[in-house]
Image (cartoon, rainbow, N blue to C red; front, side, top):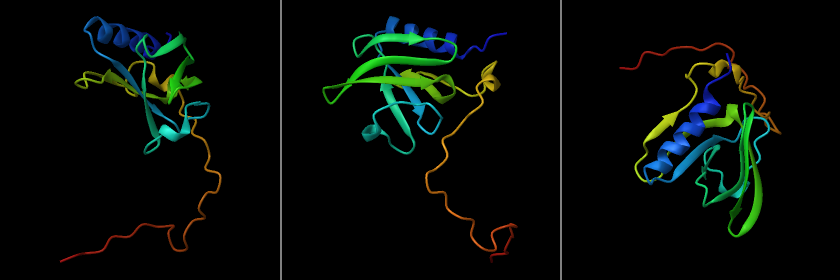
Length: 134
């Protein structure tokens, strides 16, 4: 079967719009292939307004979501692989859904970008230990 995530995202977007809410999408920017404005990233995530009045050329398929939007008046093309979508919810009250456990979620193997300068392992950090604290 095809993964359900693209269908759920579209249904959530339509449901929120039908209820006069503003649909937002939370995105994990560490997933390989994500193209979003870096200046709006916070804690490894970005929240994007996906209402029709805020975006143009919205395309949602089995692999990704893409559209164009303005950020600070500057137009930008956005590309979000399905594996990077964390949630779709209403800006007004948070009603919506998080992703990761829905049927077919395992289809989207999370491919995270490798850090440019990974930290070397600390000496002696190979085996965890416990300490009794009184």
